[in-house]
Image 1 (cartoon, rainbow, N blue to C red):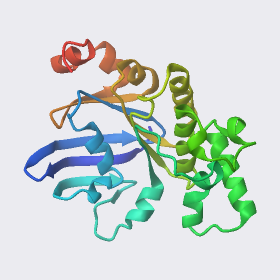
Image 2: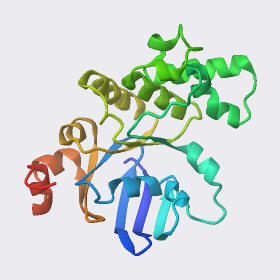
Image 3: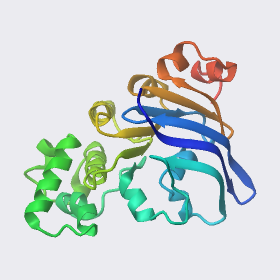
Image 4: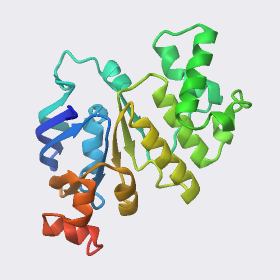
Length: 252
């Protein structure tokens, strides 16, 4: 039995008067890929951002309820948000490499965390790029700007950058939506590799992607979780008619 890595209970989130998440309760197990699906504006990305407190940066956000990671309430006033974001990495929809060299992109987090020795940084960069399945493509051009890479390569450099601080959880907000099918397949293959050591939560609009990559799947609608189950079950025998309608393309 895999333990619950993330435990959320009665989570409510308001943007001002807008009640964006409603009584969200979900247990996410470790070393699995959990996908969040649902129409635009249903709360998937908002929920994802609560897991590393990215919503803290937005004005007028009010959060009620519990989010525990490894048994710790991450909204406790004693929680160090910088440490939390080291543990819970984030990959965005649009790849966002820094306008620096490939090496400096991947070394950025370790440098901030006090690693200064060049040999140590070189080892971390190489290992992270290997884990992100980008090393063979960039090993001879580490001093070139990351901005010169293709979209798919940039996204894998961003993944390497996230992995360089050794997170336990990786949040992915539609990481392949801007990519071509070959780059998308590379990102999906990479997720399968990474889940051996990481817990991955992915927001995706792509039903086929959710069915291919995830072990568990949560269907969001109007800020609520309508259904949460094993992915195979959600896609073949959903319990809720709304889930069935969404998956079969009747709305959304």
